Length: 431
Ligand code: NIG
Ligand code: FE
Image (cartoon, rainbow, N blue to C red; front, side, top):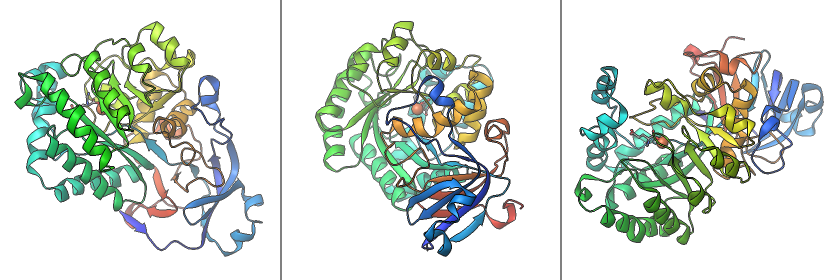
């Protein structure tokens, strides 16, 4: 990635055909028709000072700003500017693609069949356990760079392929090391409760004890994680065990989130009592739980790239959730088993085509509501003075094109806390 680490005193982006500000929220996640309000400014401009946004408005207004006179000017004619994507659910600490699983699935096996026959999450364990922290950090950094190339500026990153005390700590440290070298924001999440590792096959209670009494306290004490996640699902962690683990997280001062309802329906009420920042996947949700979700600030994070990659016919019920008042976010779920993609634009495409979200709803879900899912909305997710200068520039004239094109990257610039990341010269946008 080419990042210009010498920030000019100020940078001025001008003449965007559309500037999507997403400004004017009330501090909570967006729901209902609020998800369609992109706060569009035609012929828009953004003034960046250091790591922060100094001003947004029309080009006419912003060029009169005192600071604009000394700013480096970047002409964004014919382009769309928006807040950088917030990818609020990723699993980047792995070392190799799972090609055997891939071929088995093509031949007709399901995700659960493959896991039961020795593939799945456990097939990624050995690579992580045998790798050094530095080697893992290289994999994570590469994923972060791929994400930034597609307009992502904030990423939640989970451990979860180590599944021992040492390998989970090493995974979180690798996330920390990669995040020091990446100018965007990385939110580390402990996912020791992904599946039961082989050595605890006969003693699940003991692995839960290890997570609650040793792994979570150590991750909290060493400030290696901000959240604890759990895969609450048939074949992984029961609702009761999930609750127990998340309570231990809260007891250690960490935030909580969970993978739920990916393969089967789970009663969400006990989890909602723990005030999770987000509940993710949500393919199968009961009507009562949808009503309960609509009353709280927990974000439902939908991950349609996983449905696409698993070749499923059904997708999460985005329309029903949004039309019931649930706050919905979109994320990639970047991982080697169900979603090997770093691309939020691909997720927008899948969300619109397969879940019938409007392009405006999908953009809100991938920016502002993603920030809410990480509790970062005070700094991220919209372009407003005082917020972090996390910005994506796309070589399209109309915001709806962000979700329209697929299989091609139209992102031409990303600003990560004010640092400019450009596409390499050979592929840079034409004027
Ligand atoms: O979100 N479902 C649990 N975790 C991941 C898949 C992990 C894997 O298969 O490696 C998911 O889809
Ligand atoms: Fe996941």
